Image (cartoon, rainbow, N blue to C red; front, side):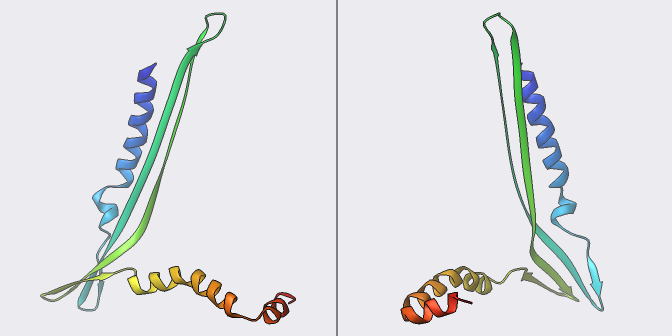
Length: 125
């Protein structure tokens, strides 16, 4: 029965290899005027599989297994070619991400600073 698990893992890894080929990571170049922009993406993949076999009281045997995986593709950067000059522009700004990550803490601190009567008045609608 171990061959069943190996076949399952092989199929999952094969699919991930198909998705994570270099053409996926480095996108089609786009020409805008005299500049060429090449999108670059980040691929994250994960998978898992498992199986087991056993026998029952009547000495019948069986095997069960399953597997699954997931792939996340997100923009990482843009390679900009302008004549002899090449630059890399990140797709996300670290500063903006940090601001969004801080919003829940800021809202909590504002809530603690508000007088109790004000907080209750706003929740009535």
